[in-house]
Image (cartoon, rainbow, N blue to C red; front, side):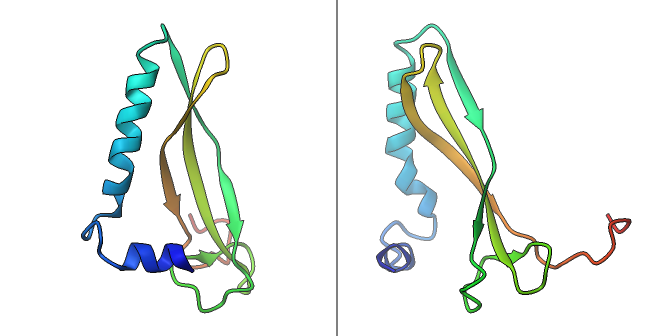
Length: 103
């Protein structure tokens, strides 16, 4: 709840991504001490089915399921040193597809 209030407070204007700028700069600085780094990405599915009033999440497979998909980019060194989460991409389905052939 505090996070929702923080983002809606306009403290960082209309671009909440500004919050991540110093963090990303620090990751780049830390990465420079390594010859090579890896950027790993995976999909995380967050289920918000119990929060029917929540905006910004959409249906999954059934109309009463509400999900948000998160694709974080984790930066690590070749030796496994975690340098941080550089970025993420979030999305949800706008509407439920009823037929697999409708793509």
